[in-house]
Length: 380
Image (cartoon, rainbow, N blue to C red; front, side):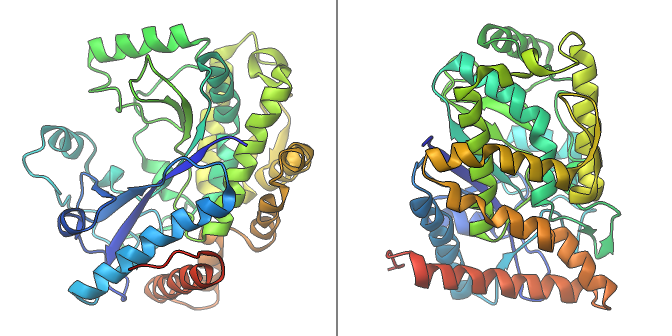
């Protein structure tokens, strides 16, 4: 199996659902957590692991550690969702007032970037294979957004999007090509830095990007950045298993490279436009979005495309010994993602605040149950 790791961004706040900035205290007093430009969310990063059971504990235990700390300093908790569901999106709360890059972020983008998400990193040490995988995964990234959408609210109101986060997130630079080779990626990145389109090598905010210790030269992993925060770790592992299986399938069958297997292979700008439109459609309607398939141009619902992909990659996942971790994909397709479940609660008469309060409770109970069942390590 390939190595996998997660960058997990979460909001902190009160059990009533109000989001409160605490990252300066958290990062100063707990190892393993890092600041974001706005103090209302904080990030932890898991080590790259191959084993899904170990990954599960790597996801759960830091959150339990964070909860323990939050309880020790007041009546605070972790807030699910990928947008400022109950506000305040009118103000930026700088976590490091003297950080010039944070100043640039606030002045350029405002609270459009004050979101919480999951970045999934998959180890691919061969840079040319990595570029092929980035091409394929970028064209299918809208499917992963559809599975993970969890930001239908902003400032206590329904936004009209299942992922308001991705609908408003300032993808930067505005035009990112499907990279033809590692050399192409290097030359393109150097050109963006020279022109100021990118402030630094981290300032590439697209659905998928190559990553590594010394970008753009030293690369070793694919980073899928499009997913909203998936609060249930088992469902996150299922989404990751779908991603890994698809990459493994490409490794076994290089003809899956979009440069070889798409009717748009000779019209790369059209592939770019198609993918951008699919991302916006998935941001609005997630699993019920009408998408255009990159291989043959047909219109297909996101949930039907995911079902097709699930069936296609199952033998690969089984061959590599992780097919059992794929099965929660079927649960998401049946019951809906978090955004859809929350909107269903609204239809039954719940308020946005009541929905978020229930989501806070469910998130905590899920983590405790998983820790008790599966994680041998306990928090000292």
